[in-house]
Length: 330
Image (cartoon, rainbow, N blue to C red; front, side, top):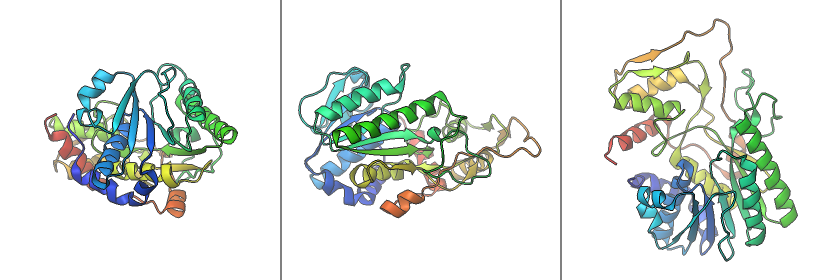
């Protein structure tokens, strides 16, 4: 797979410039390194490492080292990178201290908490000082339609998916272990994103819409187009996560996303305008009269107030960049 665009790498380098000194000379351990979030973290870290000569080393956990090497050779062959093959629930711990840990692995068929428990054993025995966990906005459960943006202190609801419950449990385990072993747990609750490496063939509306455009159209909306989401560009996401790792307040969850609500129908219009204007849009269902539109939109005020984090790259520009990257041959 081709590397991420240099302008995006430079954007993270500049946006997280206060972070790199904190990480200089450190060893990091990263799970989920071959996933969407993980690839953005690995490539932006190595870009900063090379440009600023930081002397950072990163150990990446992957279930399939051969596949990872084939998909990301510029990462896996880098002199600053070591690869550990294994499952997050049972991998053999590498030797040495790792002051920084990022747990971004996607859950397998087993409960996510098993992977978290194994990672916490690793952190407790390997000199970890700061542990960043990529949780999810799914922990909140169903967002009340009258609530424009979901804040971090909103009480957890009962209408929650199994995935959201697993993330809640993992957050709780992380906090308990941080208190017991004295490292700083940092919780990033991720919402929706747009950008290179986002899959086009999974349940991500923006990815599906760009896939439809690449296929010649039309853009197909499977529902009625009324649900509201928000989208943070992936380069901003990476800058936020690096800032959280270095400077986020321990034991404090942060929403990571955009607070700008966009309906699915509006998103389809944005994708068409930013890619191939005039692409037709088909909406499969009609809205139910009087039914409130579902929402999945975070409040990101805490990240702004505590750390000065804000979305920089607009949704329209993010869609254009993702489309231009997706058009290139692999």
